[in-house]
Length: 117
Image (cartoon, rainbow, N blue to C red; front, side, top):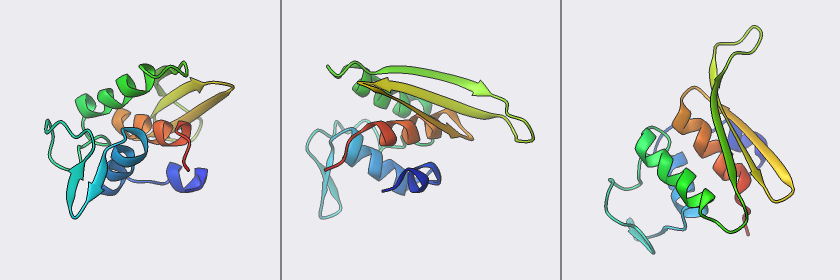
């Protein structure tokens, strides 16, 4: 996915599925989760709409040996409604993503910061 496509993702099951697969490493087969799904949430876990689920994304990334750093705050920008901003520093690059909610901002930043094959 391109940066623009990720930043346009709405909160909901499709974003949650992408985060589960690409960021959390939880696979999907035949309509059922595999590889690391702990059963705490319905499938897919509500990463983009639930703060506790989104925080598990932050924990996953900050536990990584690559040295993730997260900053989450509510920002106000000229001529725009306030948004949540999630900034993450990974390796050599800074990633910043916004969302109407904190969980959505976290999910977008995590997807941007996670390399894909």
